[in-house]
Image: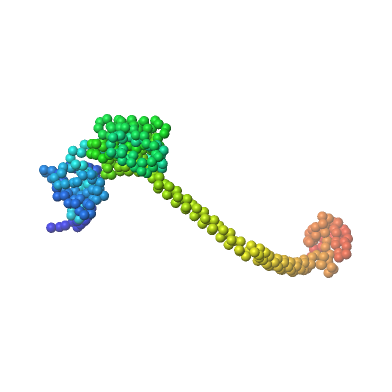
Length: 409
């Protein structure tokens, strides 16, 4: 039997190929799967391994600690659940499995689906954007709280305010915090506080409860009212593990109502301590800077240059004398050089001078225009010419001209 060597793959290559196929499939990368939990194993690391199954099939599932610690219920074998996540291959065993990031117990699926749908919509519209969130005032003069006036949440918040900064003014706007009419009342409370001109901060709050109890804080109209508020809003809804749409839209999310009150105002004692610390640091800093300036001034004053300022110019004066000597020497050198050159040129000029030639008994004859005559052809009979001698000149008329070897009359 013949084999095509080019078509033989390693196990790792096949696993990687399958992994790539899974990662490009839109359905497998974002899906919900429902079924019954079986073979649940909770590792010491916090990871959970289990199988979800129905009457015809089963699917291995893993939920890692950074996701599993957010669950607000205890997962157990036999529980009917809906799991969100993505499918991929576990190459070590060559098995595909579901990597879970969210689990919903049976009966809560429709609410969670609505929650996720609205969350995605509002996020895409930019209602959760960090750059849109308003700054929480450090010490608000007056806080408006939209909540139930009879619940434990308001008592906890008032206790915190009284303990931390008792002179802060609180305005409670009564509202239902669960049930069909709660969302409308929450919106009315937020809008009412925005109509006033004495409110610095708004808290929207209620205590813990089931997802159904907290649902008014997941309503779209409440989210949009919080987003539209011109006054900063802190949400303090439920327990630390509870998250609502209001939390994502609010300018600041507090894990509990009490924490909302903590975040809303600073502790007066802490502020006083901070001011004291800042005052001491400022004073110490000024003392340190003043001492440093004095030390520097003394150091400068004790420098030799201030005691004997004339020394500052000694080097420069000496250098100036050196430059003066160098200049004088260079000028003398240049002058002597030019003198020698002048002598040489003067000697050459005297040697070439026609006057010197005349002194030796020669003369120079010029035509009527004053041009020296150097060729017999430049002279004609009866032409007037001028002849220069050593001590004068004379004028004559040409009687005849003669070239070498002939005579022209």
